[in-house]
Length: 123
Image (cartoon, rainbow, N blue to C red):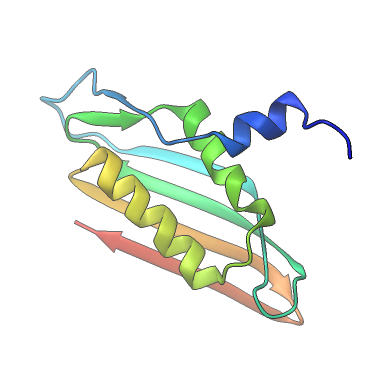
């Protein structure tokens, strides 16, 4: 068995990190798109691909982007449904950031002629 690469180790150890909001006195929207999200179908094991879009109005904290990128890559070898993945991403961001508003959209690429879009939001 070969040794893990540094990127694999970074993904394995990734945790979401929050930074102080540089403008907590102002409402503004942050939009982040992650176009190469991957996970595995819990029934078939086939890979699922999606664009994950995150929109939020920060309160006291913002997400550190490198930590988010690495953390989202942790899903690539997990057996998880579209609904569970999108909701898990939402819950983790809500817990870490405590934003004023958050929306997470999981736009999953068609497979078997079925296109699924999951939207989770809370004002």
